[in-house]
Length: 144
Image 1: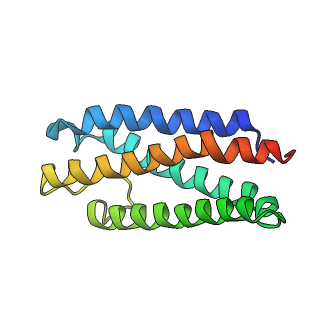
Image 2: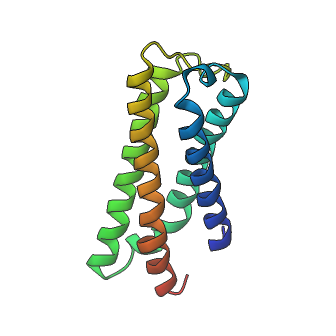
């Protein structure tokens, strides 16, 4: 079982990478550097890992709760996980078609890329905030 401290550390790393990447990717010349690509792929891996851990460890007890409000919150978070995975998959398909190599982003329209990446960051950061403010306290309140 993962601890809340470990979940918060994951959230911190994802937030930090979002902020650094937002700054770096604003400069078109940085988008093609190996260092920036490494950070971007680390970000993607961390987001995927975090969602998988939360999905695996947080919902079981919530879904089996006799309280409909509690089980509905779990269902909403699960739905949000599926949506983030879909958005991330679509983003990777559009901007990282050779993702297996993990060495490049394929940016033809920098303004469009920035818009898409900012939306991705916003969705993920909102999810982190929702987890911190709603999901973790709910799980703790149930004694887990």
